[in-house]
Image 1 (tube, rainbow, N blue to C red):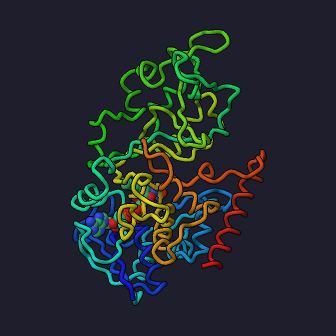
Image 2 (image 1 turned 180 degrees about the vertical axis):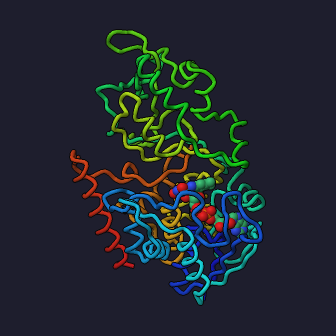
Length: 428
Ligand code: FAD
Protein backbone atom coordinates (compact mmCIF):
# COMPACT_ATOMS: atom_id res chain seq x y z
CA UNK A 1 0.00 0.00 0.00
CA UNK A 2 1.43 3.40 -0.97
CA UNK A 3 1.87 5.88 1.84
CA UNK A 4 0.97 9.58 1.82
CA UNK A 5 1.71 12.14 4.52
CA UNK A 6 -1.06 14.70 5.08
CA UNK A 7 -0.18 17.72 7.21
CA UNK A 8 -3.09 19.30 9.10
CA UNK A 9 -6.37 17.72 10.24
CA UNK A 10 -8.42 20.74 9.25
CA UNK A 11 -11.15 20.87 6.63
CA UNK A 12 -8.87 20.24 3.65
CA UNK A 13 -6.55 17.72 5.35
CA UNK A 14 -9.39 15.54 6.67
CA UNK A 15 -11.18 15.40 3.32
CA UNK A 16 -7.95 14.61 1.53
CA UNK A 17 -6.87 11.93 4.05
CA UNK A 18 -10.31 10.28 3.90
CA UNK A 19 -10.35 10.07 0.10
CA UNK A 20 -6.82 8.68 -0.01
CA UNK A 21 -7.53 6.14 2.72
CA UNK A 22 -10.69 4.96 0.93
CA UNK A 23 -8.59 4.38 -2.17
CA UNK A 24 -6.12 2.07 -0.45
CA UNK A 25 -3.47 4.56 0.50
CA UNK A 26 -1.91 4.37 3.95
CA UNK A 27 -2.17 7.90 5.36
CA UNK A 28 -0.11 9.42 8.16
CA UNK A 29 -2.13 12.45 9.22
CA UNK A 30 -0.08 14.96 11.23
CA UNK A 31 -1.92 17.42 13.46
CA UNK A 32 -0.11 19.67 15.94
CA UNK A 33 -3.16 20.43 18.11
CA UNK A 34 -3.65 19.98 21.07
CA UNK A 35 0.14 20.05 21.79
CA UNK A 36 0.40 23.34 19.95
CA UNK A 37 -2.60 25.38 18.85
CA UNK A 38 -3.19 28.25 16.43
CA UNK A 39 -4.46 31.69 17.49
CA UNK A 40 -7.93 30.90 16.06
CA UNK A 41 -8.59 27.27 17.04
CA UNK A 42 -10.23 26.55 20.41
CA UNK A 43 -10.46 22.75 20.55
CA UNK A 44 -8.54 19.63 19.64
CA UNK A 45 -11.29 18.52 17.23
CA UNK A 46 -10.51 17.84 13.59
CA UNK A 47 -12.18 20.07 11.01
CA UNK A 48 -12.81 22.80 13.56
CA UNK A 49 -14.76 25.76 12.16
CA UNK A 50 -12.75 28.72 13.45
CA UNK A 51 -15.43 31.37 13.05
CA UNK A 52 -18.96 31.14 11.61
CA UNK A 53 -20.84 27.81 11.82
CA UNK A 54 -22.28 28.29 8.34
CA UNK A 55 -21.14 26.54 5.17
CA UNK A 56 -23.15 29.19 3.29
CA UNK A 57 -25.91 28.73 0.69
CA UNK A 58 -27.44 25.28 0.32
CA UNK A 59 -29.08 25.61 -3.11
CA UNK A 60 -27.11 24.14 -6.03
CA UNK A 61 -28.11 27.12 -8.17
CA UNK A 62 -25.74 29.13 -5.96
CA UNK A 63 -22.02 28.59 -6.64
CA UNK A 64 -21.13 27.45 -3.11
CA UNK A 65 -24.28 25.29 -2.98
CA UNK A 66 -23.18 23.68 -6.24
CA UNK A 67 -19.70 23.10 -4.84
CA UNK A 68 -21.28 21.28 -1.89
CA UNK A 69 -23.49 19.22 -4.20
CA UNK A 70 -20.49 18.13 -6.26
CA UNK A 71 -18.68 17.14 -3.07
CA UNK A 72 -21.76 15.17 -2.00
CA UNK A 73 -21.69 13.31 -5.35
CA UNK A 74 -18.02 12.53 -4.76
CA UNK A 75 -18.79 11.02 -1.32
CA UNK A 76 -17.16 13.77 0.65
CA UNK A 77 -16.70 12.88 4.31
CA UNK A 78 -16.99 16.48 5.44
CA UNK A 79 -20.25 17.20 3.62
CA UNK A 80 -21.64 13.94 4.98
CA UNK A 81 -20.72 15.07 8.52
CA UNK A 82 -22.22 18.53 7.83
CA UNK A 83 -25.50 17.04 6.57
CA UNK A 84 -25.62 14.84 9.66
CA UNK A 85 -25.05 17.68 12.14
CA UNK A 86 -26.93 20.50 10.42
CA UNK A 87 -28.98 23.07 12.31
CA UNK A 88 -31.87 25.17 10.92
CA UNK A 89 -30.41 28.10 8.96
CA UNK A 90 -32.91 29.11 6.26
CA UNK A 91 -31.32 28.77 2.84
CA UNK A 92 -27.88 27.97 4.26
CA UNK A 93 -26.22 24.78 5.44
CA UNK A 94 -25.09 25.50 9.00
CA UNK A 95 -23.90 22.94 11.52
CA UNK A 96 -23.55 22.37 15.22
CA UNK A 97 -19.81 23.01 15.20
CA UNK A 98 -19.00 20.68 18.12
CA UNK A 99 -20.99 17.75 16.75
CA UNK A 100 -19.52 18.41 13.31
CA UNK A 101 -15.94 18.34 14.64
CA UNK A 102 -16.63 15.30 16.83
CA UNK A 103 -18.11 13.36 13.93
CA UNK A 104 -15.13 14.11 11.66
CA UNK A 105 -12.65 13.25 14.41
CA UNK A 106 -14.33 9.93 15.18
CA UNK A 107 -14.58 8.91 11.51
CA UNK A 108 -10.96 9.80 10.74
CA UNK A 109 -9.56 8.16 13.88
CA UNK A 110 -11.44 4.92 13.27
CA UNK A 111 -10.37 4.53 9.63
CA UNK A 112 -8.05 1.52 9.42
CA UNK A 113 -5.84 3.18 6.78
CA UNK A 114 -5.27 6.43 8.70
CA UNK A 115 -2.71 6.89 11.46
CA UNK A 116 -3.02 10.15 13.37
CA UNK A 117 0.26 11.60 14.61
CA UNK A 118 -0.06 14.51 17.05
CA UNK A 119 3.08 16.39 16.12
CA UNK A 120 4.01 19.68 14.56
CA UNK A 121 5.68 19.20 11.17
CA UNK A 122 8.56 21.60 10.64
CA UNK A 123 10.11 20.46 7.37
CA UNK A 124 9.07 18.47 4.33
CA UNK A 125 11.89 15.93 4.16
CA UNK A 126 9.66 12.91 3.59
CA UNK A 127 10.42 10.19 1.08
CA UNK A 128 6.71 9.70 0.28
CA UNK A 129 4.11 11.97 -1.30
CA UNK A 130 3.05 14.83 0.96
CA UNK A 131 -0.06 17.01 1.07
CA UNK A 132 0.40 20.31 2.90
CA UNK A 133 -2.99 21.30 4.34
CA UNK A 134 -1.78 23.30 7.31
CA UNK A 135 -4.18 26.19 6.75
CA UNK A 136 -4.04 29.97 6.97
CA UNK A 137 -2.40 29.77 10.39
CA UNK A 138 0.38 27.36 9.43
CA UNK A 139 2.93 27.19 12.24
CA UNK A 140 6.05 29.33 11.96
CA UNK A 141 8.76 26.80 11.14
CA UNK A 142 6.69 25.00 8.53
CA UNK A 143 5.80 28.37 6.99
CA UNK A 144 9.52 29.09 6.78
CA UNK A 145 10.13 25.74 5.04
CA UNK A 146 7.32 26.47 2.55
CA UNK A 147 8.70 29.92 1.95
CA UNK A 148 12.08 28.48 1.00
CA UNK A 149 10.50 25.79 -1.15
CA UNK A 150 8.27 28.15 -3.11
CA UNK A 151 10.55 31.20 -3.28
CA UNK A 152 10.52 33.85 -0.58
CA UNK A 153 8.27 36.33 -2.35
CA UNK A 154 5.59 33.68 -2.78
CA UNK A 155 4.19 33.41 0.75
CA UNK A 156 1.81 35.96 2.14
CA UNK A 157 1.21 36.34 5.79
CA UNK A 158 -1.94 38.30 5.94
CA UNK A 159 -4.96 38.92 3.91
CA UNK A 160 -6.42 42.39 3.73
CA UNK A 161 -8.80 42.12 0.85
CA UNK A 162 -11.53 44.42 -0.37
CA UNK A 163 -14.99 43.11 -1.30
CA UNK A 164 -15.56 41.88 -4.85
CA UNK A 165 -18.79 42.20 -6.83
CA UNK A 166 -19.87 40.79 -10.18
CA UNK A 167 -19.69 43.24 -13.07
CA UNK A 168 -23.14 42.30 -14.30
CA UNK A 169 -24.70 43.33 -10.97
CA UNK A 170 -23.32 46.91 -11.13
CA UNK A 171 -25.91 49.46 -12.22
CA UNK A 172 -24.12 51.08 -15.17
CA UNK A 173 -26.91 53.66 -15.54
CA UNK A 174 -25.35 55.27 -12.47
CA UNK A 175 -21.74 54.05 -12.55
CA UNK A 176 -19.41 54.90 -15.43
CA UNK A 177 -16.10 53.74 -16.89
CA UNK A 178 -13.17 56.19 -16.57
CA UNK A 179 -9.61 56.40 -15.33
CA UNK A 180 -8.50 59.33 -13.20
CA UNK A 181 -7.51 62.38 -15.32
CA UNK A 182 -8.42 60.41 -18.45
CA UNK A 183 -5.19 58.41 -18.14
CA UNK A 184 -5.39 54.80 -19.30
CA UNK A 185 -8.38 53.44 -21.12
CA UNK A 186 -11.19 53.95 -18.64
CA UNK A 187 -10.48 50.65 -16.92
CA UNK A 188 -12.13 51.64 -13.65
CA UNK A 189 -15.82 51.54 -12.89
CA UNK A 190 -16.69 54.69 -10.92
CA UNK A 191 -19.61 55.10 -8.54
CA UNK A 192 -20.18 58.83 -7.94
CA UNK A 193 -21.71 60.27 -4.76
CA UNK A 194 -23.42 63.57 -4.01
CA UNK A 195 -22.72 65.29 -0.67
CA UNK A 196 -26.00 63.95 0.77
CA UNK A 197 -25.31 60.39 -0.37
CA UNK A 198 -21.79 60.55 1.05
CA UNK A 199 -22.99 61.91 4.42
CA UNK A 200 -25.55 59.12 4.83
CA UNK A 201 -23.02 56.48 3.76
CA UNK A 202 -20.38 57.92 6.09
CA UNK A 203 -22.60 57.98 9.16
CA UNK A 204 -23.57 54.31 8.64
CA UNK A 205 -19.96 53.29 7.98
CA UNK A 206 -18.55 54.69 11.21
CA UNK A 207 -21.35 53.14 13.28
CA UNK A 208 -21.24 49.71 11.61
CA UNK A 209 -20.56 46.50 13.54
CA UNK A 210 -17.03 45.18 13.15
CA UNK A 211 -15.50 41.77 13.78
CA UNK A 212 -13.43 42.02 17.00
CA UNK A 213 -9.72 42.27 16.18
CA UNK A 214 -7.68 39.40 17.58
CA UNK A 215 -4.36 40.17 19.22
CA UNK A 216 -2.43 38.38 16.44
CA UNK A 217 -4.17 40.44 13.78
CA UNK A 218 -3.16 43.86 15.08
CA UNK A 219 0.15 43.70 13.24
CA UNK A 220 -1.77 44.16 9.98
CA UNK A 221 -2.55 47.81 10.72
CA UNK A 222 1.10 48.65 11.01
CA UNK A 223 1.69 47.48 7.48
CA UNK A 224 -0.02 50.59 6.09
CA UNK A 225 -3.20 48.72 5.35
CA UNK A 226 -5.95 50.62 7.11
CA UNK A 227 -9.54 49.29 7.17
CA UNK A 228 -11.88 51.71 5.40
CA UNK A 229 -14.04 52.21 8.52
CA UNK A 230 -10.93 52.98 10.59
CA UNK A 231 -9.81 55.58 8.07
CA UNK A 232 -13.32 57.09 8.08
CA UNK A 233 -13.19 57.54 11.85
CA UNK A 234 -10.26 59.95 11.44
CA UNK A 235 -12.59 62.63 10.12
CA UNK A 236 -15.71 63.01 8.04
CA UNK A 237 -13.84 64.05 4.90
CA UNK A 238 -10.76 61.81 5.27
CA UNK A 239 -12.06 59.29 2.72
CA UNK A 240 -12.70 62.03 0.16
CA UNK A 241 -8.97 62.81 0.30
CA UNK A 242 -8.12 59.09 0.22
CA UNK A 243 -9.70 56.20 -1.68
CA UNK A 244 -12.92 58.15 -2.44
CA UNK A 245 -11.24 61.27 -3.79
CA UNK A 246 -13.28 62.68 -6.70
CA UNK A 247 -10.51 64.60 -8.51
CA UNK A 248 -9.88 63.69 -12.12
CA UNK A 249 -13.22 61.89 -12.34
CA UNK A 250 -15.62 64.67 -13.27
CA UNK A 251 -19.09 63.94 -14.65
CA UNK A 252 -18.43 62.75 -18.22
CA UNK A 253 -21.30 64.91 -19.58
CA UNK A 254 -21.54 68.05 -17.39
CA UNK A 255 -17.87 68.07 -16.31
CA UNK A 256 -18.98 68.81 -12.73
CA UNK A 257 -16.99 67.42 -9.82
CA UNK A 258 -18.70 64.86 -7.55
CA UNK A 259 -18.41 64.99 -3.78
CA UNK A 260 -16.85 61.51 -3.64
CA UNK A 261 -16.24 58.61 -6.02
CA UNK A 262 -15.85 54.92 -5.20
CA UNK A 263 -13.65 53.20 -7.76
CA UNK A 264 -13.89 49.54 -8.71
CA UNK A 265 -11.01 47.75 -10.35
CA UNK A 266 -11.18 44.70 -12.60
CA UNK A 267 -10.34 41.62 -10.58
CA UNK A 268 -10.16 38.69 -13.00
CA UNK A 269 -8.91 38.16 -16.54
CA UNK A 270 -12.42 37.67 -17.89
CA UNK A 271 -13.55 41.07 -16.51
CA UNK A 272 -16.56 39.54 -14.75
CA UNK A 273 -15.45 40.58 -11.24
CA UNK A 274 -14.55 44.00 -9.79
CA UNK A 275 -13.13 44.93 -6.38
CA UNK A 276 -13.87 48.09 -4.39
CA UNK A 277 -10.56 49.92 -4.34
CA UNK A 278 -9.35 50.76 -0.81
CA UNK A 279 -12.24 48.99 0.90
CA UNK A 280 -10.31 46.42 2.96
CA UNK A 281 -12.44 46.16 6.03
CA UNK A 282 -13.17 44.51 9.35
CA UNK A 283 -16.95 45.04 9.09
CA UNK A 284 -19.16 42.01 9.64
CA UNK A 285 -20.29 40.51 6.33
CA UNK A 286 -23.96 41.47 6.80
CA UNK A 287 -22.88 45.04 7.50
CA UNK A 288 -20.71 45.11 4.39
CA UNK A 289 -23.66 44.10 2.26
CA UNK A 290 -25.96 46.65 3.91
CA UNK A 291 -23.59 49.61 3.84
CA UNK A 292 -21.71 49.04 0.58
CA UNK A 293 -25.05 48.55 -1.21
CA UNK A 294 -25.71 52.21 -0.32
CA UNK A 295 -23.00 53.21 -2.82
CA UNK A 296 -24.77 54.53 -5.95
CA UNK A 297 -24.54 51.87 -8.65
CA UNK A 298 -24.11 49.03 -6.14
CA UNK A 299 -27.75 48.96 -4.93
CA UNK A 300 -28.18 45.40 -6.21
CA UNK A 301 -24.54 44.37 -6.27
CA UNK A 302 -23.81 40.69 -5.90
CA UNK A 303 -20.92 40.31 -3.45
CA UNK A 304 -18.92 37.24 -4.40
CA UNK A 305 -16.39 37.91 -1.70
CA UNK A 306 -16.58 40.16 1.33
CA UNK A 307 -13.64 42.14 2.61
CA UNK A 308 -11.47 40.34 5.15
CA UNK A 309 -8.52 41.25 7.29
CA UNK A 310 -6.92 38.38 9.08
CA UNK A 311 -3.65 36.57 9.11
CA UNK A 312 -3.64 34.26 6.17
CA UNK A 313 -0.66 32.27 5.04
CA UNK A 314 -1.02 31.35 1.40
CA UNK A 315 1.29 30.62 -1.47
CA UNK A 316 1.26 32.24 -4.87
CA UNK A 317 -0.36 29.16 -6.37
CA UNK A 318 -0.64 30.33 -10.01
CA UNK A 319 3.15 30.62 -9.96
CA UNK A 320 3.96 27.35 -8.23
CA UNK A 321 1.10 24.81 -8.52
CA UNK A 322 -0.29 22.74 -11.41
CA UNK A 323 -3.98 21.93 -11.94
CA UNK A 324 -3.73 18.94 -9.60
CA UNK A 325 -2.49 21.27 -6.85
CA UNK A 326 1.00 19.75 -7.00
CA UNK A 327 4.19 21.78 -6.91
CA UNK A 328 5.35 22.26 -10.50
CA UNK A 329 8.93 21.93 -9.31
CA UNK A 330 8.25 18.74 -7.28
CA UNK A 331 4.90 17.00 -7.96
CA UNK A 332 5.42 14.72 -4.94
CA UNK A 333 4.33 17.70 -2.83
CA UNK A 334 0.69 18.83 -3.09
CA UNK A 335 -1.12 21.66 -1.34
CA UNK A 336 -4.75 21.83 -0.21
CA UNK A 337 -7.01 24.22 1.67
CA UNK A 338 -6.73 27.89 2.41
CA UNK A 339 -2.95 27.80 1.96
CA UNK A 340 -3.52 27.40 -1.82
CA UNK A 341 -5.36 30.73 -1.97
CA UNK A 342 -8.87 29.35 -1.97
CA UNK A 343 -11.07 31.14 0.55
CA UNK A 344 -13.71 29.57 2.78
CA UNK A 345 -14.66 26.36 4.54
CA UNK A 346 -16.29 24.53 1.61
CA UNK A 347 -13.52 25.67 -0.72
CA UNK A 348 -10.97 24.12 1.68
CA UNK A 349 -12.84 20.80 1.57
CA UNK A 350 -13.01 21.00 -2.24
CA UNK A 351 -9.29 21.59 -2.68
CA UNK A 352 -8.67 18.69 -0.24
CA UNK A 353 -10.75 16.55 -2.61
CA UNK A 354 -8.89 17.88 -5.67
CA UNK A 355 -5.46 17.19 -4.15
CA UNK A 356 -6.54 13.63 -3.31
CA UNK A 357 -7.82 13.05 -6.88
CA UNK A 358 -4.54 14.41 -8.22
CA UNK A 359 -2.69 11.69 -6.29
CA UNK A 360 -5.16 8.82 -6.72
CA UNK A 361 -6.17 9.30 -10.37
CA UNK A 362 -3.49 11.71 -11.61
CA UNK A 363 -6.39 13.82 -12.93
CA UNK A 364 -7.60 17.39 -12.55
CA UNK A 365 -11.32 18.16 -12.25
CA UNK A 366 -12.99 19.38 -15.47
CA UNK A 367 -13.34 23.16 -15.89
CA UNK A 368 -17.14 22.85 -16.22
CA UNK A 369 -17.40 21.85 -12.56
CA UNK A 370 -17.32 24.12 -9.52
CA UNK A 371 -14.29 22.25 -8.14
CA UNK A 372 -12.53 22.58 -11.51
CA UNK A 373 -13.36 26.29 -11.67
CA UNK A 374 -12.01 26.88 -8.18
CA UNK A 375 -8.80 24.95 -8.85
CA UNK A 376 -8.44 26.76 -12.17
CA UNK A 377 -8.60 30.09 -10.31
CA UNK A 378 -5.98 28.88 -7.86
CA UNK A 379 -3.57 27.47 -10.42
CA UNK A 380 -4.18 29.53 -13.54
CA UNK A 381 -5.15 33.11 -12.61
CA UNK A 382 -2.73 36.00 -12.73
CA UNK A 383 0.05 35.55 -10.20
CA UNK A 384 0.37 39.32 -9.79
CA UNK A 385 -1.55 40.41 -6.68
CA UNK A 386 -3.01 36.91 -6.35
CA UNK A 387 -5.69 37.00 -3.62
CA UNK A 388 -7.69 34.20 -1.98
CA UNK A 389 -11.12 33.76 -3.51
CA UNK A 390 -14.44 32.14 -2.66
CA UNK A 391 -16.15 30.05 -5.32
CA UNK A 392 -18.50 32.15 -7.46
CA UNK A 393 -20.06 31.86 -10.91
CA UNK A 394 -17.65 34.50 -12.23
CA UNK A 395 -14.97 31.77 -12.13
CA UNK A 396 -16.96 29.39 -14.36
CA UNK A 397 -16.64 29.09 -18.15
CA UNK A 398 -19.52 31.27 -19.41
CA UNK A 399 -22.31 29.56 -21.40
CA UNK A 400 -21.56 29.35 -25.14
CA UNK A 401 -24.58 31.51 -25.88
CA UNK A 402 -25.32 34.43 -23.56
CA UNK A 403 -28.18 33.64 -21.17
CA UNK A 404 -29.70 36.92 -19.97
CA UNK A 405 -31.99 35.54 -17.31
CA UNK A 406 -29.89 35.00 -14.18
CA UNK A 407 -31.99 32.14 -12.83
CA UNK A 408 -31.70 30.29 -16.14
CA UNK A 409 -27.98 30.96 -16.24
CA UNK A 410 -27.47 29.49 -12.75
CA UNK A 411 -29.62 26.47 -13.66
CA UNK A 412 -27.39 26.02 -16.71
CA UNK A 413 -24.21 26.11 -14.59
CA UNK A 414 -25.72 23.60 -12.15
CA UNK A 415 -26.87 21.12 -14.82
CA UNK A 416 -23.62 21.35 -16.78
CA UNK A 417 -21.50 20.88 -13.64
CA UNK A 418 -23.44 17.95 -12.20
CA UNK A 419 -23.59 16.11 -15.56
CA UNK A 420 -19.86 16.62 -15.92
CA UNK A 421 -19.10 15.35 -12.42
CA UNK A 422 -21.18 12.22 -12.97
CA UNK A 423 -19.43 11.48 -16.28
CA UNK A 424 -16.04 12.24 -14.76
CA UNK A 425 -16.67 9.73 -11.98
CA UNK A 426 -17.88 7.08 -14.43
CA UNK A 427 -14.77 7.47 -16.55
CA UNK A 428 -12.33 7.00 -13.70
P1 FAD B 1 -7.50 24.66 8.90
O1 FAD B 1 -8.92 24.26 9.03
O2 FAD B 1 -6.98 25.78 9.70
O3 FAD B 1 -6.62 23.36 9.19
C1 FAD B 1 -5.22 23.40 9.24
C2 FAD B 1 -4.76 22.45 10.34
O4 FAD B 1 -3.34 22.32 10.28
C3 FAD B 1 -5.09 22.96 11.73
O5 FAD B 1 -5.78 21.96 12.44
C4 FAD B 1 -3.71 23.28 12.34
O6 FAD B 1 -3.67 23.02 13.73
C5 FAD B 1 -2.81 22.32 11.59
N1 FAD B 1 -1.41 22.75 11.48
C6 FAD B 1 -0.91 23.99 11.19
N2 FAD B 1 0.44 23.95 11.13
C7 FAD B 1 0.81 22.66 11.38
C8 FAD B 1 2.06 21.98 11.46
N3 FAD B 1 3.21 22.62 11.25
N4 FAD B 1 2.08 20.66 11.76
C9 FAD B 1 0.92 19.98 11.98
N5 FAD B 1 -0.30 20.56 11.94
C10 FAD B 1 -0.36 21.90 11.61
N6 FAD B 1 -14.04 30.67 6.19
C11 FAD B 1 -15.39 30.62 6.11
O7 FAD B 1 -15.95 30.04 5.16
N7 FAD B 1 -16.16 31.19 7.06
C12 FAD B 1 -15.61 31.85 8.14
O8 FAD B 1 -16.34 32.34 9.00
C13 FAD B 1 -14.19 31.93 8.24
N8 FAD B 1 -13.58 32.58 9.28
C14 FAD B 1 -12.23 32.59 9.39
C15 FAD B 1 -11.63 33.23 10.51
C16 FAD B 1 -10.25 33.24 10.66
C17 FAD B 1 -9.62 33.92 11.85
C18 FAD B 1 -9.44 32.62 9.68
C19 FAD B 1 -7.95 32.62 9.82
C20 FAD B 1 -10.02 32.02 8.56
C21 FAD B 1 -11.41 31.99 8.39
N9 FAD B 1 -12.03 31.38 7.29
C22 FAD B 1 -13.42 31.31 7.21
C23 FAD B 1 -11.22 30.87 6.17
C24 FAD B 1 -11.03 29.33 6.04
O9 FAD B 1 -12.20 28.80 5.49
C25 FAD B 1 -10.71 28.60 7.29
O10 FAD B 1 -9.50 29.08 7.79
C26 FAD B 1 -10.60 27.06 7.07
O11 FAD B 1 -10.51 26.44 8.32
C27 FAD B 1 -9.44 26.67 6.20
O12 FAD B 1 -9.33 25.27 6.14
P2 FAD B 1 -7.91 24.55 6.04
O13 FAD B 1 -8.16 23.10 6.05
O14 FAD B 1 -7.15 25.14 4.93
O15 FAD B 1 -7.15 24.99 7.38
